[in-house]
Length: 230
Image 1 (spheres, rainbow, N blue to C red):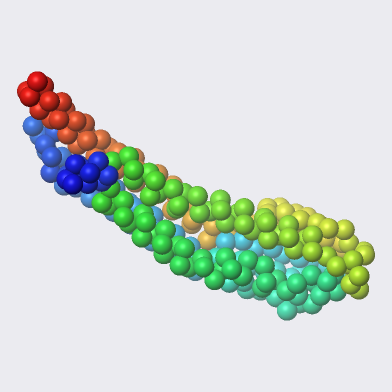
Image 2: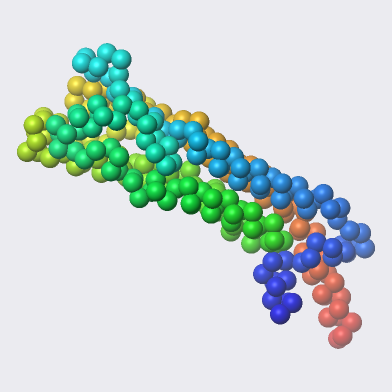
């Protein structure tokens, strides 16, 4: 049973190295602290917008905008939904509703998974870091799919449905939808999620630096024990 636990979670951090020395305790605390910071950064990102789209048109001199958070939408929703109605498109809030309802739970779970790497003292810690590394890219892929679905849900029998061809608003940069100009940008929340991934990579570096000598020392001790028995 002990061998199974060691193979899964790695050696105990008190194992001596091959030269008889011991790793200092702070060498093992540093990656744990870094992983905790990464998880907190990701949680903090949920309070800020991840993406923003602005629309301009002659009848809206001040423009219209919508801010996308991981769990909600904010902005000129009523006006944009009124325009979408003339195109036979559903309200903005319907797109990604499932994702927004699960986002906070997913982010908390990602943070807990990353925190669990504290108990993993070998290369399997990378597997626990994959969710936080992948999260911002999953967000972008899902957002693009939502935008594509909306732009291709125009009802040709609606009041203005025949005047506009199917479209996909750009994730980043300028675009045009009929007489409307659009400008899309990634916001601070998204960049914080990227920062959480970068901090996680730094944590993985220190994790490997702390535990690799310990793993090698255990293998060395096991090889010596095998040689003695032989």
